[in-house]
Image 1: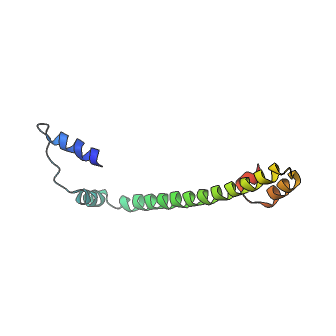
Image 2: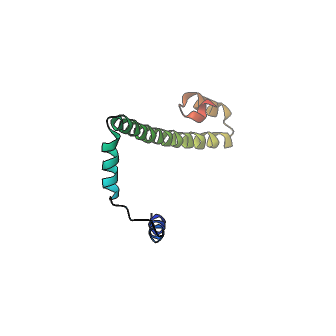
Image 3: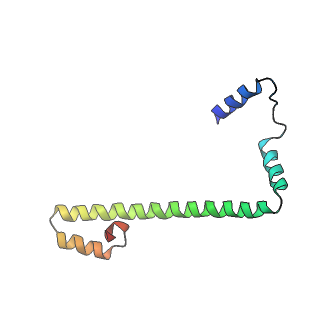
Length: 100
């Protein structure tokens, strides 16, 4: 954000460029009110998108942890040459790597 502030300060030194009259929060409020009723739908879509992003991030993190654990167990079994046990573990596991 510091580089943006420096850039904005540099622009203000150009002749003919004036400082903004509204603070960022005032600008957001003005834009929301000027957008009319459609802003409620856009806001709802943005909120829904953020919820989906957070949900998928959490879901992929959990699946990644299960996959690492599963692969560690399979590597241990294979290093001990217990192939049938490794196959049985893959059949029982719900980790994404077990399906491969």
